[in-house]
Length: 231
Length: 197
Image (cartoon, rainbow over all chains, first blue to last red; front, side, top):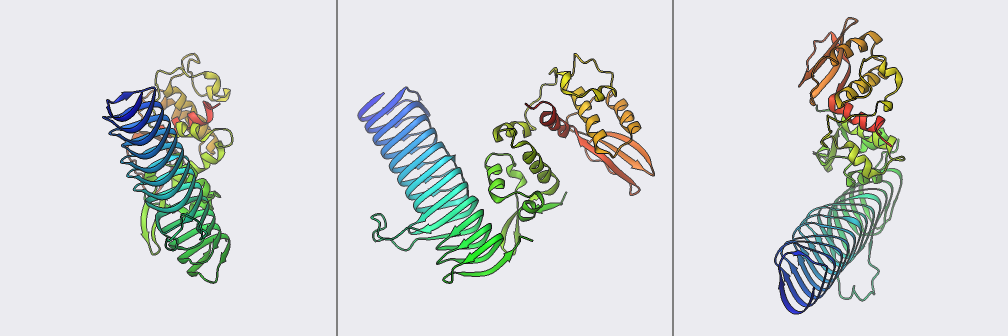
C-alpha cells in the first residue's frame, strides 16, 4: 500500500505500508514493513516487523521487531518492541517491553518499562519502574523515574556544550528507589539507593545508601545515612 | 501466612544479585503478586512470601544453566492445563519407585505420575519411615486425587497418620506435620525433575 497525500485506510492486514503525507488507519493494522514520512494515526494496535517514522506517529499499541521514530510519537497503550530507537518526543501511556530501548529527546512513560538495555540522552519521565539490565542515562533538564532496578546503572549529566543542550537547564534526576549491582550516579536526588558497588558522584542528595561491597561518595554530594549490609 | 522476607534479606539468603532478581522479574519467573509493598521508615519496600520465593529462587538457580529462562517460565506456569489423559513415559521414573505401586507401566496418567513423584519426594525427604510411605501409597492409589489437594503425614507421639485433604488442615499441639506436598507442587516437580530435557 502506497500513500501519497492524504488517505484513510480500513483496519486489516497489509503487506507493506508506505506513507508520504498523511494516513489514518481506522482500527488495528498489521503489516510487514511500515515507513512513514509525514504523519500516521493508527486508531487501534499496530503490528509490524519494522516501523520507521519521520514525522508524527499516533497508535494504540505497537508490537514490532524494530521501531525507529524521528519526531513525535504518542502511544496510548503498550509498546512491545525488540529494538526501539526514538529521536524527539515519545509519549507512552501504558507499559514498555523489549530488548533495546534507545531514546534521545523527551521521553515519557506512564507505566513500567522492562527492557534489557535502556539508554537515554535527554529528559525522561517514568511513573512506574524502569527495570533493565543496563541503564545509562545522560541527563538534560529535570527527569523523574519513580524506581530504577537492574544490574548496571549509570546516571550522568550530559556534558555541556552539545547542540542539544543549548540553552537547557541543569540535568537532574529525581527518584524514590534505585537498586542495582553496580551503580554510578551524578546529579541524582533519591530516597534510597541499594547496591553492591555504589559510586555517588557530584551533585547528589541521597537519604539512605545501602551497599554490600564498596561505596564512594563525592565531597560535593550529601548522603544522610549509609549502611554496609555486606556482613 | 505472614512470613515475609525483605528483598535485601532474600538476596543474602539465596546469594543472588539485584541484577538477577530484576532479570527474573522481567522474564516473569517471579509473579508480580509476590511483590508485596509495605511502608517502612525509608518509604516503600518490597517483601515476598518467604517460603514461595526462596523455593522458586533455588529452583531457578538449579535449572538456569541447563535451560533457557523462557523454558523455565513454561515450567513454573502452574496454571497451564496439564492433560490428565496424557500417557507419561514410564521410563522417566526410576525403578525403585515402581516397587511401591502396581501400576501398568503402559498407561501412566498424570495422577499416577504425581503419586510416583510423591513417593520419590517422601523417600528422599528422610522424614518418613518406609512403612509410612507404603501406608500413604495405599491410600493415594484408591482415592480420587484433586488438583487442590494437600498430601501430608502427621505424626503424634511416634505414630504417623497420612492425610489427603482439600483446604486447610489443623493439627493439635502434640502433632507435627512431618511431610507435606500440594498436588500442584508435585506437578511442578514432575515437570522440572522428570520431564525436562
